[in-house]
Every structure is written in structure tokens, then in C-alpha cells.
Image (cartoon, rainbow over all chains, first blue to last red; front, top):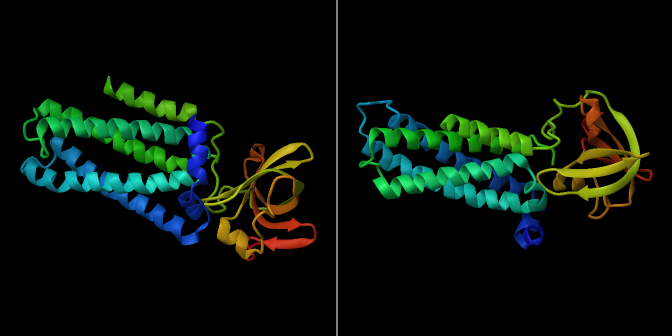
Length: 157
Length: 122
């Protein structure tokens, strides 16, 4: 079932185009990096703030900038990542680092959705311990996803 | 507790990963000297980001890294040239870790015709 789906993805015209195009694949790869840069570059300072860094800087101001930047970055990374995946879907699906990365992304995204639905965009209604927990989960998930993603290029494919 | 969870997730990633081998970008992972192999292609996975052939060299299974599509095309290779059942001679650098049976091709011969993937290297 999954094998059939992966084979169909790989046979799609989109995947076929990016499998052979010289600059198309490079461009999508660049957009994937841009998405990750925006996501992790926002999560890192915001999590440090929630853990107690820059105590005199208002949390709401920082969150209003960084939360949308992180969400946009995630969206871009996911869309570009799906294209990169489609090119060799059957091979990538078996790569352990990619499987671990997807678990971390699911956990990180679920944690963010839960925290912001419950405590608002700027997390104003959260307690100190709730903020700390969310920050630690975020840092672990997104830095872990970054590391696992980078390691995909160093696994045998 | 939380740190245990993350440690477990990372460990899972490494456990799931079979046949971890540093490869692909550049030449830093290769031995620095060329070898010459001839065998029959048993599997060809071409296309971005890397093209990989599995070649049976007198009963030994070698993984041969060839070029991206543009590099193979520049060398003169046509679609279907590198496919299952084709006999191929490959000159290139093997992985410095000799147990890997992994080689990055510099040039390929199909019959007597030379296809230079990296014309500036020899």
C-alpha cells in the first residue's frame, strides 16, 4: 500500500522534472534551506527568551515577530521538502534519519499548535513552567530535526 | 525524563539507519588514487541529487557513484546507456574505507567509448 503510493509519487511528472533538472533541484534545495533557516532562526531566540534570556525584553514583542516567521519557514521547508522527497521517494522512505526527522517535526509542530491554541500567539497566558516546557520541547524537536535532516545527506542512498 | 525522551529519539534514528557511510559530496572521503573496475550493472538509480549504480564485479557487489543528470549528459551518456544488464568499465576513486565497496566514478567506458564525468581529474 505504502510502496504503491511511494512508487506513484516517484513516477509523477513533478518528481520526474526535478529528478533531471540541473537548476530546478538546486533551487528547491535552496528554498528548503531558507525555510529551515527561518524556522530554526526564529525558534532558537524565542525558546531562549521563554527560558529566561533577555528578561527586560517584552515576550509579546518578540513572539509577534518570531512565531509567524517560524510558521512561514516551516511551511516553506515542508513544501520544498516534499518535492525533494518525491524525486527518490522509495529510497528516502527507508532512510532512518528521515524517519526520525519526521517524528521530531510532528512532535514539534504538535507542541507549537497546542501551546499557541491554549496560550495565544504570544503565549501571554502561560505559566513560567509551561513556557519552560514548551521551549525545551521546541528546542529539542527543531534542533534534532535539523541535525537528522543534515545527516540524510551522509547516509548511503 | 524529557532528556531521556530525546536521547531515545536520537538513538532510534541511528538504529534505524543501516549501512551508514560518509559519501557523495566532494572527494574528501575517497582514497586519493584511482582503481579500474569492470562489471555488469545490476541496478541503476539515476537522477538528482546523485546517480548510483550497483555493479557486479566478478561476484563482488560494488556501489558506483556516477554524476548528476547534467554531468552524465555532458560526458556524452544518453538515457538508457547506464541500465541493468549493461557491462561497464569504471575508473575512479574508491572509498578510503575499503570495506565499503563504494567508488566515485571519474570516467566510464561502454565498450571502447570513453565518457569522462570529471574531465579535469585523472
